[in-house]
Image (tube, rainbow, N blue to C red):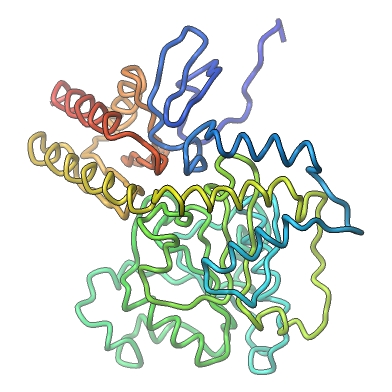
Amino acid sequence: MDGQIHHAIWYPGHDLLLQDIVRAENCHLYDSSGKRYVDLESGVWCTSIGHANPRILRVMAEQSARIAHTGYCYTNGIVEEAGRDILSLLGFQDGSCVFLCSGSEAVEYGVRVAQAASEPSTLNRPLLMTMTDSYFGAYGSANRKRDDEWFCFDWAPCAACPDFEECGERCRHWGAIPFDRIRGFLFEPGSSSGLVRFPPQKLIGNIVTAIKENDGLVLVNEVTTGVGRTGLWFGYQHYDISPDFVALGKGIGNGYPVSVACFAPGVLERLDGKPLNYSQSHQNDPLGAAIAQEVVKVILEEGLIERGRGIAAKLVSGLEGIRDRTGLIQAIRSRGLMVALELKDDPSTSFTTRTQRELVRRGYVLARRPGINVLRIDPSLTIDQEDIDGFLEAFESVLTEAR
C-alpha cells in the first residue's frame, strides 16, 4: 500500500474533494494546512447543532466516565429518561422506544414490527406501501422493497393534480392502489431520496385516512427530515397526520451514531406477545441515549428551530435573487434548512459538478447528487448568518463567471 490509504468506498457524490480534515467547530472544518471550510451539509446531515458542540462533548465525557454500554441483563436510568423526553416530543407519552445505532436500523425495526403485527383485520394484507422515490436505508426489507412485501406508489402524476378530493374510483391512478392488500404506509416526508420533493399534503392525508380506516399502521422515516431540519420538530408535522411509528437518526445524535425507533401507545400490543427477532450489541446504550437527550435539550433551550427558520428564510430569499439575476438555477425546493438547488445543466459540460468543486475550492462544502444536476444545502441549525451570506456571495460569483 506504500503507506497510503486507498479509498475503495466513499460517500456517493463527494469524490473526496476534501482530504485530511483534522478539526471541526460548529459549521467550520479545518484541514491540515489550516484552511477553513464552511460545512453546508452538516456532515452527512447529522450535526444538527454543530460540530464539537460543547454541551454534547461534556455529556459524552461525563456519561462515558460513568457507563457507556450495557448488556442485555441490566438497564440504566438515562435510557428511560431520554426515552420519555423523545416520546413526549412526538406526543407518544405512553408509547415505547428503542435506541439503536443508525437510521437504517430504526426504519427496519419499525418495518419488522408492522410486518409482524397480528391485528386480525390486516392478516391477509401482506404489503406495506410507500412512494417510489423514497429511500429508507442500507439494508433489510425497506431497502429491497420486494414486490411480495411492498407496493410502491408513483406520486408524480399527483403533483399537478388540481383536486385531491377526487382521490377514489374516478381516479385511475388512485384506483390502482391495492388497499385490500396493504397493512401499512411508510412515509418519507420530503427528502425524496435526497432530491427534496414534497408530496402534496392532501394526497398524503388521503392515503393515511385510507390506511387508518383499514386498521393499518402509519410509519414515518424522520432520519433526514426530523430534529428541526424542516423548520418544525418533524417533517410529518407539515402534513397534519398522526403516525404510529417514527424513526429518528442522523441529527438526533449530532454526529454520534445513535437512532431511535419510536412507537405510539398500543402499537406494540399488535405483536400479541410475539417476540420481535431483532437485537444488536449497542441496543439501548446509555451513551447514545444521553447524547440524544442532550441534543433535544439544546434545541429546546436555545430556540434553535425558530432560529433555523429565520436563517432558512434569508437563505432561500438570497438564492431566489441569484436565480433571477443569473438564470442558471432551474428550481429551488426547500422546507426549513433542507434545500435543493436544481441547476440548468448540460450533461456534456458537467456544470453542476464543476460548480460544486469550485465552491469547495472557495471554502464552501455542499452535497451533489451523482449523475443529477442537484446540489443540497443542509447546514446545522447553529450556522451563523455570516456564513450564509458568504456562501451566497461565492455561489453567485461562481454562476456569474460560468455564464
